[in-house]
Image 1 (cartoon, rainbow, N blue to C red):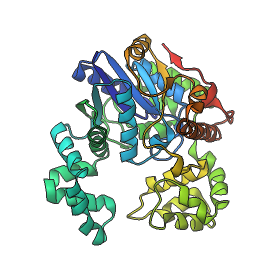
Image 2 (cartoon, rainbow, N blue to C red):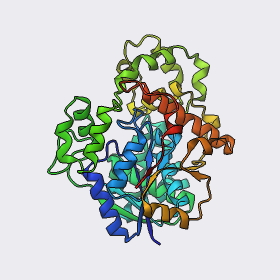
Image 3 (cartoon, rainbow, N blue to C red):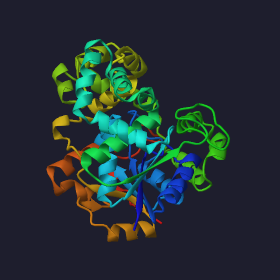
Image 4 (cartoon, one colour):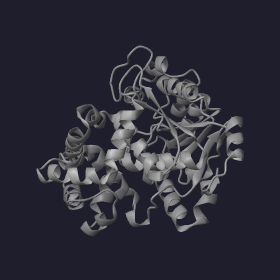
Length: 395
């Protein structure tokens, strides 16, 4: 059977996501759709608006057959690690196709750019631009412009195109076979703060929900998603990032300079600067603003801060996800699982996956820590251990 994979956050799941899943099924001709989805925290280093299992149900009712957790070290990471973790899990689940939303829809350009970025030529071409004072992102664009042309470099300036290039890099680097299906984004653009037609960005929807204007999101959500969102709000499960501010600052102020050495994605004295700024910053926003530079964008700083709070030790992180944690499935999804030959430990219980190996234990511990931290952002505050006790969604 042909199986199409999608990597997402669904924060929250909206009509654009439903359109993408339907388009992915049509474009690939697949008999099943597998989604890899972040759990308690997102790529930008913020708590997910809704619990993972609620978002999984939204995805299943919106067209997915199987939803797999993207573990925290890959979900709350830069685009390269995010993409590689997602592609590895989809490959393990037997996916033969990969669909993704993007501003461009040229798979040849995406693949050509990915091949160049993985080549020794790129490593050589990048060095003079870095030596000239450009930050990595700018130096990368300059190298791609010179090697492939401005149109290829432009892919790296648009968020969904950049992620699409990283998906192609991951497929090539891991040596897996997946047919690509770029799906041009419809309606509102990424992070656009105003709807376009029947579609609105997840950023716009989160803003409305956090402002208490949930009813304003109804035109842009599938009919099946709105009741789930309303129920989550009634239970107090909407996470508000500002509720974590004092917890975060307290943790950062208790850290010694050496403690920052183990945090992922830190370099060039960034740990020392964060350690110093944390002791004087009057708010988390002030800390992020003061720490942000051309070389270190805000999203990277926020991820580093949250990894520090969670106690992430980069020396304990595996290169790829060490297990396949099922968040939910339909009857069709169960059939996909039974037919697949999965090379990883697989299950619906994180508690049972955790003790299998040192890597599964380290990653599961971070998942638990992230879920417990997200619980502090809810009102009422949720209990510890929810990621271990919540039952999978079975439709």
